[in-house]
Length: 571
Image (tube, rainbow, N blue to C red):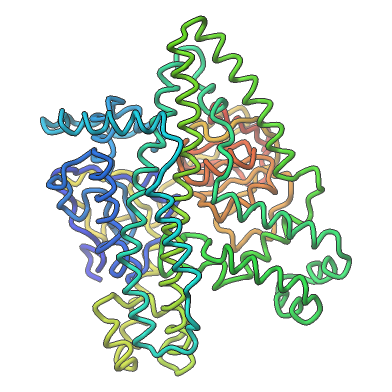
């Protein structure tokens, strides 16, 4: 690492120069591992992202030749290319402000118009796609990729029996499939803004909060499935005295104790990991732990969920949200009056928002499933190299870059010091106080110029203060705020508290069920975790800037997920 840049950082796009951490740090909150960037993201995922834009009709292939036209890595962290996302909105006729509202949810630097923003040929293609977005009931490409991703998981060989070279080859061979699955993830993500944008145009003048209320639950959201399965497991624990006693004894060594004393539950737990082990915090990173590599993360979530009574089930919350959605729909239709065209458009937009909310999550699930199979192959290599004394721990294998893998398997001793030193440098990236936006026309600040966390003063909120974010999931909740920075440190979180987190991905959503409401520093209406929070019927305010630093731990707060506000009641 030099003082100017981290070794996997990308060159910024000259055509699309503005980048943001918004809607990036809720899926890749941490600095990406070198192998995650060099094997998966830079050569394949970013290109798959661009291919999705082209297939959607937004861009001509010649506009997507720069690696960082869709996103890039700066200071080791993912940044979404906000300029190209805004051009999607402009060419779709929505405008860049509507795109910002759907995906970024806070005040952003204004867009500077370019003569190439408007492209009639591309707009015609987008118009055709938008018609499909509002009317089509199926997404054949997505279903194709679901079958491919599931096939990859089902065909996993016995990794412990393979040679190091075969393990590396498996990881490499999966990357073109990963690129393919990003096609529909990109289309689903982009088109998920269409329905909400149309609803905003129809309802914004009367009550902007109606948009999130009328969308409500999408149904059949893949990213919510692990939460439902965990809830069912928690009911097994709660209803069994022996299991309850094991959990009461503490999480340390719990999995081993359960294997010895609760064979049936252990078998069910193994089935859960087989079905959903690809999920986990920072799951977009090849080198991040997943539930399958760290089952204790799941046991920690179960430990929280088992404390809830049956009436806190997702089904009960969904019923309450469904009633709110029905009331909001009546209010919206009254506003639209007798206009048959407006009413028809309203129903199309609501249905589209729900479909694409679910399809966006299915697209992500496909991507994560494929990425996880590469993760498991490399984790097995890391486990062996650790046992042989070449690595300090299995995840250190992800400190290599792709071009070093052949050396790593041929002469691992030669890489030990390099990977150990690189890990120290990588961990230093966690402490950076990252700029939320980058306008790369002014240049990218040198890595050594980025301040460290804690050096920027933040004023604590006081009683009566109202913190404004964006609406994410309808409902109002009151409770004591609990600041939680990661799902590995949830032991102090109590049922009924308000979860206040820096960012969340779908692996957090089982913890959502334990909370009365959720507040996150970043995110917007179309963020992955926010789609799932609506599915689970949990009030959520997203994009509440610096919430984890401004809201005192233990403060009594009120969260209004329809308006995105957090009111401090008592500290």
